Image (cartoon, rainbow, N blue to C red; front, side, top):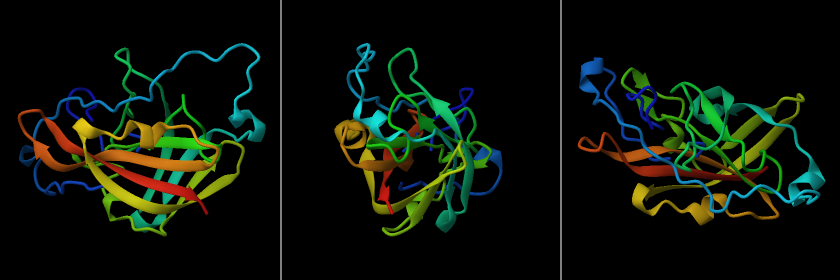
Length: 202
């Protein structure tokens, strides 16, 4: 994904194309990319109580993944005017799709991050290295911490983004980390794939 027309999304949500650590000139200019949003999006009916409200969980404030040295504040993300999910403002900060569940509530909580930028690695640069069993921590605004365990890491073409798998409501809490990966398309100015890390409460 891109910030200010030049930064590439790493997305709340996995394989990352390695960018040389040399000069900025070695890195291509990036265009904005889009992340699909879940279908629907209608406002809730007055008085309706979602299953999420039965087990209220505080909003997430920070993401920590010790195995890949991730320690980042979490930005609240909504949707762009075109309906796609907004992306974090900075390549060094991850974001939480705030129109979905909070991490630890029933359903899939989605976190997005940039894989790199013209200045170097982004916050999700190493998430491709995560293996099943790796622990992911989400610190909340009330001082509590949710602990999640990685169950799988997948790479999918952006043209075949698994919207249903990432956003479909469930009664079980889950956590999805979304970033960019695969090979870089210089004509499009973006990576060809998305990388998705699936995690469950541990």
